[in-house]
Length: 214
Image (tube, rainbow, N blue to C red; front, side, top):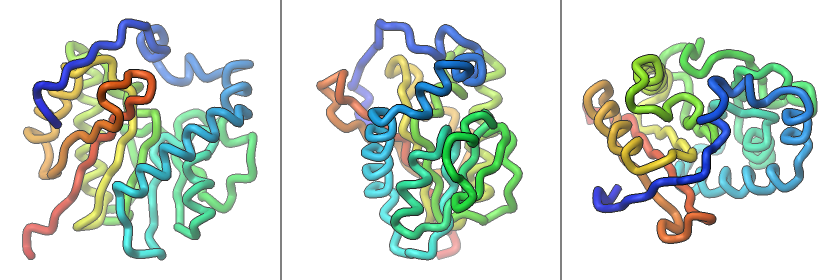
């Protein structure tokens, strides 16, 4: 990430208004989101880009879709014959589509229940801003630290985690970077597509678990 890159989103996003994703995604809003063809199209496009960055060579790879929502990213991966585990805290999202082929699990992202070195790759589309969005919130700092520490454990060596998310400003990115360097052995940083176009800008956090024994 270029440390000279600055941005600040003026419009309030849902995660600034609602404390938890489950407070926002409920009732008619949840149904509309889950059935939206436009959102499905956008998320599948982002997933395609995330997989380009992930650059998996093993077609038998097991991938965790962390914060899967209705499963749009998971279905995209399944169509390319990857083995997928779809994970989300909102159980209602799992009622709209036939998810049995993507192994849906309901649970908190900060309390992932998987064994060490389970996954060949991990992606998360449009979820991380719900975990960490306030640099002064001690609980969020703790949750983000817990999340990335656990992801490091459950990821196989020489594998990557790809987050696509919507941070409010560059300051959040800088604080994330500091926490990652201080608390984990991950290597990586941020990739920003279309940095000069706020409407098309997509921000990815790329983290790699390297095998230091090589």
